[in-house]
Length: 338
Image (cartoon, rainbow, N blue to C red; front, side, top):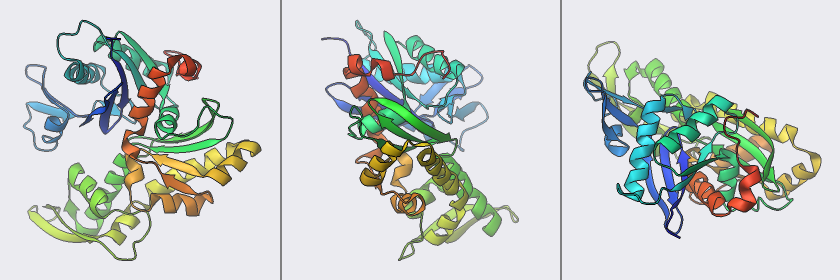
């Protein structure tokens, strides 16, 4: 079979691409740099992210997806075209079939935009799969059985919690809080406490290097450079992990609330399965230290981080396309609102 089957996790922060027979072949930031004078794309992915906060006025660097949905259609289409051609090669005799993940709570207009962008970018056929379903499938959960499976997918823009049984999402909750909101909370905390202005990439680096959902037994420290708000000059401070934990308390509370809301809606028989089997955490947010311990403590249900959590959605989207006949009924409708 010559046609390619491609699963795409179209994330707010990263785009991951799975190709049948090859696994995950691409993981790049969902960032695009556009030359505003010529209205021409100058960089996509890693190269564009390097320009964030550093580009001249003539180059606009942006993330075309916000909270898992398309904020800039033309730029998203161009970004998809770039990634699809990077995988398939420019001379494509056989257009690929593509499965894209979308948040469960999107509107019909938002789902249609993702579908159309994929077709315009060179897909022969495009299908949509709800992110929690793809995440659970990619994490290797037995979603086709009648056992209740709980997944918490913590992305860059949204966190979605869902209970899945017989290849369908039974109950779910979603909040537009994810990794980006944690970064913002860290920036705000440092600005208020130290009068220091830092960029998004610095905030993300702090989260990755010393961030933790719960206080650590041994505090971690990190030097942070930014601009003093009062003097206007460069300044270096030292931040510790306890401060980061304090900074991200509110967004984490919103995520915990979503998990609890899902459990409260769960039918008793499935709830019994979840208590016994626990929940699986996927997405980039799953890599935050102690997030599993926080959810276990707050929800009273064991929480486990999936193996390779950041790749689960792309893997699940690809597997769903490979098993299309089985998964067909579970896919998200295009242009039809729930």
